[in-house]
Image (cartoon, rainbow, N blue to C red; front, side, top):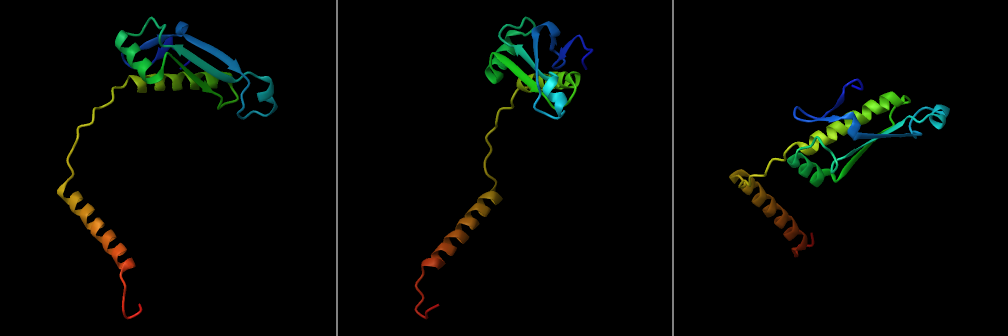
Length: 140
């Protein structure tokens, strides 16, 4: 994945590596003493507002869903290269998910069976509560 000339988000969008900002730091994940001395935590950020490859529609959609910039970190592995690949994958998935259009909800009406189930449950609940407050002269 790291050998690709850009970050492929979907069929229409590939973000050039030049638009990705990387930073590395010590990881809090596995690694023992190695984690204290090596900068294996990878953080990648993408400036949505300043990107040259986004169409206006893509920029608008990403900005309203994710904001002006997107930052992803990975510190799962002892290897900086593996964490870098994980960060690229996570950024790609996050951007692809934000670009995917949400389906509009079509209101539906309750079915006859669901209405009957609801009313039957209300009757049972009402009867149970009524039984709790009834006075019984025989002392039960």
